[in-house]
Length: 248
Image (cartoon, rainbow, N blue to C red; front, side, top):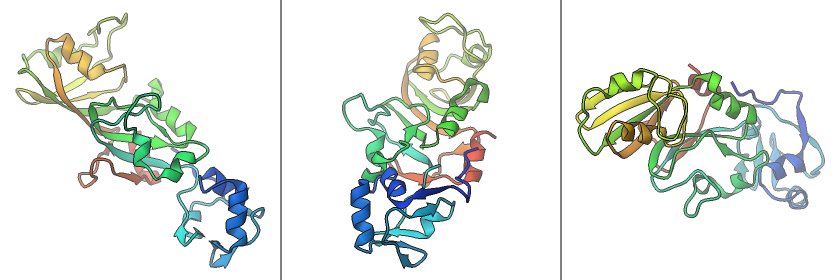
């Protein structure tokens, strides 16, 4: 689980806020001198003073009349809409554009935990905690991911056994997939749960059995579900208990 900074950890005010995207150190110094930074009700005039980075910091430090953004150790759940990519290198809208502009300047940077392709919607995790990111995506973590699948043609009936066998080989690969669970909902809709994350895995699996995925939506990672009331393009900050559900 991601751990918040300890109570003894401190940072200079200008470095803390610069790392969180509020501006350069010079700009932070200007904010402080203008009385626009308030900590525990007191205006902080010196940008070089040290601040304890505690879990409750965002409720105690205010910048320009607004509560501080979440400090480092941030974990987000985002409802990725269709048509948005997870890569900085592709043209068009990217998931980072759904976050506050200031968050795109944070250091350490916020990164997606794995990816969903442009035509896949649903639950996407993001974090600035490198240890948490690698713990989730590490193969030994065995984190399950569930997708809701809509197909072009009716299921044949043998797909569940094939996917669960652990012998299915995808085109162009030299090792079989780990067993995958298929929950058939009707003739052209199913839920599929897997622990690997190979390139376009779900789409390629159904192609291997002669079908075509027309819609793909991820609604669960581990035991963490995509909230029904979280609209596409929206996000929420995860609590420590919610992060723990990823590994449940």
